Amino acid sequence: MSLNRSEKEAVINEVTSLAAKAQTLVIAEYRGITVADMTKLRVEARSKGVSLSVLKNTLARRAVAGSQFDVVADQMTGPLIYGFSEDAVAAAKVVADFAKTNDKLVIRGGAFAGKALDVNGVKQLANIPSKEVLLAQLCGLLKSPISRTAVVLGALAAKKGEGEPAAA
Image 1 (cartoon, rainbow, N blue to C red):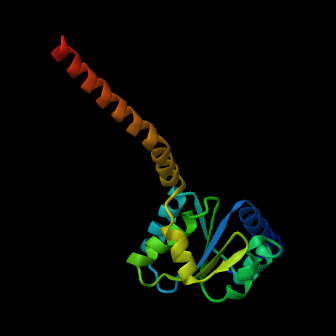
Image 2: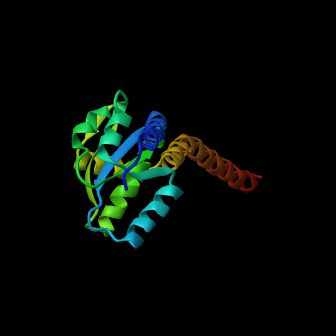
Image 3: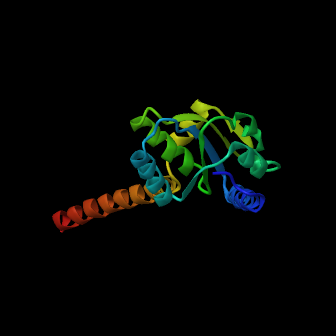
């Protein structure tokens, strides 16, 4: 079904606002995916804060023109699904994880921080741990020297405590 001019402008405005807030864009070809599988992908994406959209490529090109995602405008051909995320790795992770289990979803590329990503770039971005995991690792690193010092001091206190009753 064809969109009229005001509907097209609404789509462009919506995608432009998504692109303005997003850090990452992932583009994948969805040809041959069943509706049930596409629904699973959308549910997973929604739970991770990723906005997945099937858009007319000309509208998508107009929406990202002048933004950091303009670098992938030449890749916008064919039946594509566009994943925008505010989290740097969420879109790449959702699409790459789904592509592992469904061979009909083919990652075409993406963009991050104003740079175009190829398929391998998207997969590398997907392999980066999430923000929560990275924060937990940082806390563990900061806590490690303190806990080691506490263990050593505890061992010294226990050793001194053992030595005093024997000397008395």
